[in-house]
Amino acid sequence: MVPEQATPDGRADPAADGGATPARPDGLTAAADPVESAIARLYGEPLLRLPTDLYIPPDALEIFLDAFEGPLDLLLYLIRKQNFNILDIPMAQVTLQYLEYVEQIRKSNLELAAEYLLMAAMLIEIKSRMLLPKRQDVLVEEADDPRAELVRRLLDYEQIKLAARQLGAIPQEGRDFQRPALPVEQGLAPVWPEVDAHDLQRAWMDVLRRAKLTAHHKIGREELSVREHMSAILRALQGARFVEFSELFDGQAGVPVVVVHFVAMLELAKETLIEITQAEPFAPIYVRLAYSPA
Image (cartoon, rainbow, N blue to C red):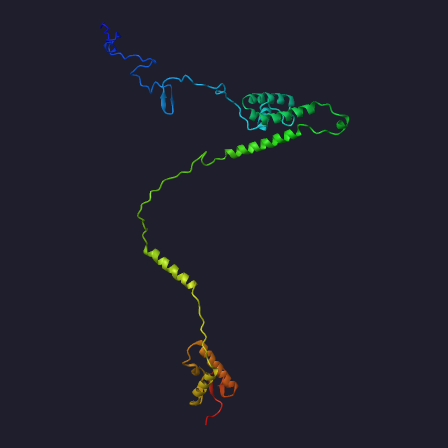
């Protein structure tokens, strides 16, 4: 056993006690990691002890197992939970259960309870109308059920709630799935595709085809004189006795010139300046002057 050594101020020397670490006033040893022994973190910093001025409100841990979107939602929940017939609502039981829930939320949130109190007043009114005795004149005719308007509103709300639930079940982007996005790396230098000779040939043929579609046909007007052709025919017949019909059209270029030359021949025959003869059917046709030149 090693004797305990004392420091100059009369306390025991911790270094002499087998290397044991001294105890701290907050109960943590000097060698312990403060981060690992922290009971919580506040703004990222480890919290080693509970604050003395910590205040926890009484309703901080209050838990609501059922949350409703409004008075109709609560009323429909009470009816469906107990399997009541919505067309024959037992107003006494439903009103009592409804008021118990309203009393609970009135203690914590008075503004929220105001909307529920309006429906509670409506339920109490319906219940009181059902308890009132009916008059004789009302018994003769079938009286309207005081619950009819409430039932109609509940059925409409239930249909809207069911439709909203079906719409919410449809997959939505951002909630149920994400569209894949793949980054594409693009270089700064553009990469041009290689052009094949056959592709270039097809492009050139396409250009020619479009050029033919847009080409315009220009018709030029050539002025031809029938009188001039009549004089030419007379000059050709002066030196010969008979001239074959086809020989008169030799040297005439173009269809318009041939047509005018033929019209000129018809005009000469009309004016009896030439004669057109044929010896027999299918024989050659000859043309001669109808007069003898001096």
